[in-house]
Image (cartoon, rainbow, N blue to C red; front, side, top):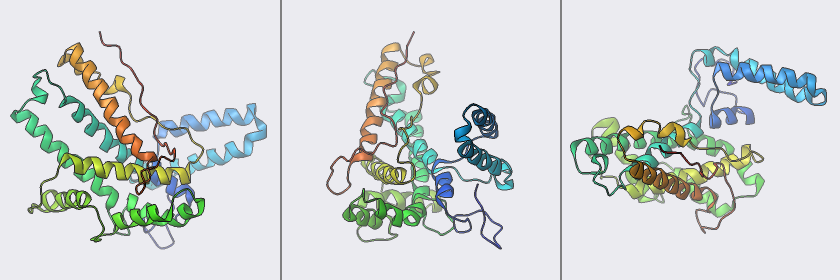
Length: 297
Protein backbone atom coordinates (compact mmCIF):
# COMPACT_ATOMS: atom_id res chain seq x y z
CA UNK A 1 0.00 0.00 0.00
CA UNK A 2 1.22 3.50 -0.84
CA UNK A 3 0.69 5.62 2.26
CA UNK A 4 0.72 9.39 1.93
CA UNK A 5 2.67 11.64 4.26
CA UNK A 6 0.74 13.77 6.70
CA UNK A 7 -1.08 16.72 5.08
CA UNK A 8 -0.53 15.27 1.58
CA UNK A 9 -3.49 14.42 -0.64
CA UNK A 10 -1.93 13.74 -4.06
CA UNK A 11 -0.27 10.42 -4.84
CA UNK A 12 3.32 11.07 -5.97
CA UNK A 13 6.82 9.82 -5.22
CA UNK A 14 7.49 12.91 -3.15
CA UNK A 15 4.33 12.48 -1.08
CA UNK A 16 4.46 8.77 -0.21
CA UNK A 17 6.08 7.39 2.93
CA UNK A 18 9.01 5.42 1.54
CA UNK A 19 9.98 2.11 3.12
CA UNK A 20 11.16 -1.13 1.51
CA UNK A 21 7.64 -2.42 0.91
CA UNK A 22 6.62 0.81 -0.82
CA UNK A 23 9.72 0.80 -3.03
CA UNK A 24 8.95 -2.82 -3.97
CA UNK A 25 5.42 -1.81 -4.92
CA UNK A 26 6.78 0.97 -7.12
CA UNK A 27 9.32 -1.38 -8.68
CA UNK A 28 7.15 -4.41 -9.39
CA UNK A 29 3.69 -2.88 -9.55
CA UNK A 30 0.43 -4.18 -8.11
CA UNK A 31 -1.89 -6.97 -9.13
CA UNK A 32 -5.58 -7.01 -9.91
CA UNK A 33 -8.30 -7.20 -7.28
CA UNK A 34 -8.98 -10.77 -8.36
CA UNK A 35 -5.32 -11.65 -7.84
CA UNK A 36 -5.23 -10.29 -4.30
CA UNK A 37 -8.54 -11.91 -3.34
CA UNK A 38 -7.30 -15.24 -4.64
CA UNK A 39 -4.03 -14.86 -2.73
CA UNK A 40 -5.89 -14.01 0.47
CA UNK A 41 -8.04 -17.16 0.14
CA UNK A 42 -4.94 -19.26 -0.46
CA UNK A 43 -3.02 -17.78 2.46
CA UNK A 44 -5.96 -18.26 4.82
CA UNK A 45 -5.93 -21.95 3.93
CA UNK A 46 -2.17 -21.99 4.52
CA UNK A 47 -2.70 -20.56 8.01
CA UNK A 48 -4.73 -23.67 8.81
CA UNK A 49 -2.52 -26.24 7.06
CA UNK A 50 0.80 -24.73 8.24
CA UNK A 51 0.09 -22.95 11.54
CA UNK A 52 3.80 -22.60 12.30
CA UNK A 53 3.97 -20.00 9.50
CA UNK A 54 0.64 -18.36 10.30
CA UNK A 55 2.15 -15.06 11.45
CA UNK A 56 3.98 -14.65 8.15
CA UNK A 57 0.88 -15.57 6.16
CA UNK A 58 -1.30 -13.14 8.14
CA UNK A 59 1.21 -10.35 7.56
CA UNK A 60 0.85 -10.88 3.81
CA UNK A 61 -2.92 -11.09 4.10
CA UNK A 62 -3.02 -7.77 5.95
CA UNK A 63 -0.80 -6.18 3.30
CA UNK A 64 -3.11 -7.34 0.51
CA UNK A 65 -6.19 -6.15 2.39
CA UNK A 66 -4.61 -2.73 2.89
CA UNK A 67 -4.06 -2.42 -0.86
CA UNK A 68 -7.62 -3.53 -1.61
CA UNK A 69 -8.92 -0.93 0.84
CA UNK A 70 -6.82 1.92 -0.54
CA UNK A 71 -8.98 4.44 -2.49
CA UNK A 72 -6.01 5.34 -4.70
CA UNK A 73 -5.67 1.69 -5.74
CA UNK A 74 -9.39 1.27 -6.33
CA UNK A 75 -9.50 4.43 -8.44
CA UNK A 76 -6.62 3.18 -10.60
CA UNK A 77 -4.18 5.87 -9.45
CA UNK A 78 -1.27 3.58 -8.61
CA UNK A 79 1.61 3.96 -11.08
CA UNK A 80 2.80 1.16 -13.32
CA UNK A 81 5.65 -0.76 -11.78
CA UNK A 82 9.10 -0.04 -13.21
CA UNK A 83 9.36 -3.70 -14.19
CA UNK A 84 6.26 -3.37 -16.36
CA UNK A 85 7.72 -0.35 -18.12
CA UNK A 86 10.93 -2.28 -18.80
CA UNK A 87 8.95 -5.16 -20.27
CA UNK A 88 7.01 -2.67 -22.39
CA UNK A 89 10.37 -1.57 -23.80
CA UNK A 90 11.80 -5.05 -24.38
CA UNK A 91 8.76 -6.74 -25.91
CA UNK A 92 8.03 -4.48 -28.91
CA UNK A 93 11.71 -3.73 -29.51
CA UNK A 94 12.59 -7.42 -29.72
CA UNK A 95 9.56 -8.31 -31.82
CA UNK A 96 10.22 -5.62 -34.41
CA UNK A 97 13.94 -6.45 -34.47
CA UNK A 98 13.01 -10.04 -35.28
CA UNK A 99 10.42 -9.19 -37.92
CA UNK A 100 12.68 -6.75 -39.77
CA UNK A 101 15.41 -9.41 -39.93
CA UNK A 102 13.30 -11.43 -42.39
CA UNK A 103 14.92 -11.79 -45.82
CA UNK A 104 11.93 -13.39 -47.55
CA UNK A 105 10.47 -10.20 -48.98
CA UNK A 106 7.70 -10.12 -46.37
CA UNK A 107 5.88 -6.79 -46.47
CA UNK A 108 6.66 -6.05 -42.80
CA UNK A 109 10.38 -6.27 -43.53
CA UNK A 110 10.28 -4.41 -46.86
CA UNK A 111 10.50 -0.70 -47.62
CA UNK A 112 6.93 0.56 -47.76
CA UNK A 113 4.59 3.02 -46.09
CA UNK A 114 3.30 0.54 -43.52
CA UNK A 115 6.84 -0.44 -42.50
CA UNK A 116 7.76 3.26 -42.12
CA UNK A 117 4.61 3.87 -40.09
CA UNK A 118 5.50 1.10 -37.65
CA UNK A 119 9.12 2.30 -37.47
CA UNK A 120 7.99 5.78 -36.46
CA UNK A 121 5.34 4.52 -34.05
CA UNK A 122 7.79 2.20 -32.33
CA UNK A 123 10.41 4.94 -32.06
CA UNK A 124 7.88 7.20 -30.35
CA UNK A 125 6.68 4.41 -28.05
CA UNK A 126 10.16 3.34 -26.95
CA UNK A 127 11.37 6.92 -26.50
CA UNK A 128 8.38 7.75 -24.32
CA UNK A 129 8.70 4.63 -22.17
CA UNK A 130 12.45 5.05 -21.68
CA UNK A 131 12.09 8.72 -20.79
CA UNK A 132 9.67 7.81 -17.98
CA UNK A 133 12.48 5.97 -16.24
CA UNK A 134 14.76 9.02 -16.36
CA UNK A 135 12.20 11.56 -15.14
CA UNK A 136 13.84 13.52 -12.35
CA UNK A 137 11.15 15.67 -10.77
CA UNK A 138 10.55 14.83 -7.09
CA UNK A 139 6.97 13.73 -7.82
CA UNK A 140 7.90 11.24 -10.55
CA UNK A 141 7.58 7.48 -10.03
CA UNK A 142 10.78 6.86 -11.99
CA UNK A 143 13.84 4.64 -11.90
CA UNK A 144 15.85 7.81 -11.38
CA UNK A 145 14.12 8.56 -8.08
CA UNK A 146 14.13 4.95 -6.93
CA UNK A 147 17.87 4.69 -7.63
CA UNK A 148 18.77 7.70 -5.52
CA UNK A 149 16.30 6.74 -2.79
CA UNK A 150 17.93 3.30 -2.66
CA UNK A 151 21.54 4.38 -3.00
CA UNK A 152 22.50 3.89 0.65
CA UNK A 153 21.08 0.35 0.58
CA UNK A 154 22.92 -0.38 -2.66
CA UNK A 155 26.20 0.73 -1.12
CA UNK A 156 25.50 -1.29 2.03
CA UNK A 157 25.07 -4.66 0.27
CA UNK A 158 28.58 -4.31 -1.18
CA UNK A 159 27.67 -6.10 -4.42
CA UNK A 160 28.35 -3.12 -6.67
CA UNK A 161 31.66 -1.32 -6.99
CA UNK A 162 31.87 2.38 -6.08
CA UNK A 163 33.07 3.06 -9.62
CA UNK A 164 29.96 1.54 -11.18
CA UNK A 165 27.68 3.40 -8.76
CA UNK A 166 29.44 6.64 -9.66
CA UNK A 167 29.02 5.89 -13.37
CA UNK A 168 25.30 5.21 -12.96
CA UNK A 169 24.95 8.47 -11.02
CA UNK A 170 26.63 10.30 -13.89
CA UNK A 171 24.20 8.84 -16.45
CA UNK A 172 21.21 9.88 -14.36
CA UNK A 173 22.59 13.38 -13.81
CA UNK A 174 20.41 15.84 -15.69
CA UNK A 175 22.50 17.75 -18.25
CA UNK A 176 25.56 15.97 -16.88
CA UNK A 177 28.70 16.31 -18.99
CA UNK A 178 29.53 12.61 -18.54
CA UNK A 179 26.23 11.34 -19.94
CA UNK A 180 26.71 9.01 -22.88
CA UNK A 181 25.85 10.70 -26.17
CA UNK A 182 23.45 7.89 -27.08
CA UNK A 183 21.41 8.51 -23.95
CA UNK A 184 21.50 12.26 -24.50
CA UNK A 185 20.35 11.88 -28.11
CA UNK A 186 17.47 9.58 -27.19
CA UNK A 187 16.18 11.75 -24.34
CA UNK A 188 16.51 14.88 -26.45
CA UNK A 189 14.46 13.21 -29.18
CA UNK A 190 11.67 12.49 -26.72
CA UNK A 191 11.80 15.91 -25.03
CA UNK A 192 12.07 17.93 -28.23
CA UNK A 193 10.39 16.11 -31.10
CA UNK A 194 7.74 14.16 -29.20
CA UNK A 195 6.88 16.51 -26.35
CA UNK A 196 7.48 19.89 -27.99
CA UNK A 197 7.70 19.43 -31.77
CA UNK A 198 11.22 20.88 -31.85
CA UNK A 199 14.16 19.73 -33.93
CA UNK A 200 16.64 17.21 -32.50
CA UNK A 201 19.29 14.82 -33.74
CA UNK A 202 17.98 11.62 -35.30
CA UNK A 203 18.00 8.55 -33.08
CA UNK A 204 19.67 5.29 -34.06
CA UNK A 205 19.03 1.66 -33.23
CA UNK A 206 22.24 1.59 -31.20
CA UNK A 207 20.88 4.38 -28.99
CA UNK A 208 17.92 2.24 -27.94
CA UNK A 209 20.01 -0.89 -27.45
CA UNK A 210 22.65 0.91 -25.37
CA UNK A 211 20.13 2.70 -23.15
CA UNK A 212 18.04 -0.44 -22.69
CA UNK A 213 21.14 -2.37 -21.59
CA UNK A 214 21.95 0.42 -19.12
CA UNK A 215 18.40 0.30 -17.76
CA UNK A 216 18.56 -3.48 -17.39
CA UNK A 217 21.81 -3.31 -15.43
CA UNK A 218 20.41 -0.67 -13.06
CA UNK A 219 17.26 -2.75 -12.68
CA UNK A 220 19.32 -5.87 -11.89
CA UNK A 221 21.13 -3.99 -9.11
CA UNK A 222 17.87 -2.71 -7.61
CA UNK A 223 16.30 -6.16 -7.89
CA UNK A 224 19.27 -7.69 -6.04
CA UNK A 225 18.69 -5.22 -3.21
CA UNK A 226 14.94 -5.66 -2.77
CA UNK A 227 14.38 -9.26 -3.90
CA UNK A 228 17.73 -11.01 -3.49
CA UNK A 229 16.33 -14.52 -3.08
CA UNK A 230 13.66 -14.57 -5.78
CA UNK A 231 13.76 -16.72 -8.89
CA UNK A 232 14.32 -14.90 -12.22
CA UNK A 233 10.98 -13.85 -13.71
CA UNK A 234 9.76 -14.43 -17.28
CA UNK A 235 9.46 -11.66 -19.86
CA UNK A 236 6.55 -12.78 -22.04
CA UNK A 237 5.09 -16.02 -23.28
CA UNK A 238 5.53 -16.73 -26.99
CA UNK A 239 2.15 -18.44 -27.11
CA UNK A 240 0.51 -15.09 -26.39
CA UNK A 241 2.74 -12.96 -28.55
CA UNK A 242 2.59 -15.01 -31.75
CA UNK A 243 -1.01 -16.15 -31.44
CA UNK A 244 -2.23 -14.45 -34.66
CA UNK A 245 0.99 -14.32 -36.67
CA UNK A 246 0.22 -17.55 -38.51
CA UNK A 247 -2.35 -15.55 -40.49
CA UNK A 248 0.29 -13.29 -42.08
CA UNK A 249 3.47 -15.42 -42.06
CA UNK A 250 4.53 -18.79 -43.36
CA UNK A 251 5.68 -21.44 -40.91
CA UNK A 252 9.30 -20.83 -41.90
CA UNK A 253 8.99 -17.06 -41.44
CA UNK A 254 7.30 -17.46 -38.07
CA UNK A 255 9.97 -19.89 -36.89
CA UNK A 256 12.66 -17.41 -37.94
CA UNK A 257 10.99 -14.47 -36.19
CA UNK A 258 10.48 -16.48 -33.03
CA UNK A 259 14.10 -17.60 -32.91
CA UNK A 260 15.47 -14.13 -33.66
CA UNK A 261 13.29 -12.54 -31.01
CA UNK A 262 14.50 -14.97 -28.35
CA UNK A 263 18.09 -14.41 -29.42
CA UNK A 264 17.74 -10.61 -29.24
CA UNK A 265 16.02 -10.65 -25.84
CA UNK A 266 18.64 -12.94 -24.34
CA UNK A 267 21.37 -10.67 -25.70
CA UNK A 268 19.70 -7.74 -23.95
CA UNK A 269 19.26 -9.70 -20.72
CA UNK A 270 22.96 -10.48 -20.64
CA UNK A 271 23.43 -6.80 -19.77
CA UNK A 272 21.81 -7.43 -16.38
CA UNK A 273 24.88 -9.22 -15.10
CA UNK A 274 27.60 -7.09 -16.75
CA UNK A 275 29.44 -4.44 -14.78
CA UNK A 276 29.03 -1.16 -16.69
CA UNK A 277 32.69 -0.28 -16.18
CA UNK A 278 34.60 -3.56 -16.49
CA UNK A 279 32.12 -5.75 -18.36
CA UNK A 280 32.65 -8.50 -15.78
CA UNK A 281 29.76 -10.89 -15.15
CA UNK A 282 28.46 -10.93 -11.57
CA UNK A 283 25.54 -13.30 -12.13
CA UNK A 284 22.64 -10.91 -11.45
CA UNK A 285 19.51 -12.27 -13.19
CA UNK A 286 16.22 -10.51 -12.51
CA UNK A 287 14.71 -12.04 -15.66
CA UNK A 288 14.79 -15.64 -16.81
CA UNK A 289 16.52 -16.60 -20.04
CA UNK A 290 13.91 -17.44 -22.64
CA UNK A 291 13.86 -21.02 -23.87
CA UNK A 292 10.18 -21.26 -24.80
CA UNK A 293 9.18 -23.10 -27.95
CA UNK A 294 5.99 -22.87 -29.93
CA UNK A 295 4.47 -25.64 -32.00
CA UNK A 296 3.59 -24.19 -35.39
CA UNK A 297 0.99 -26.09 -37.37
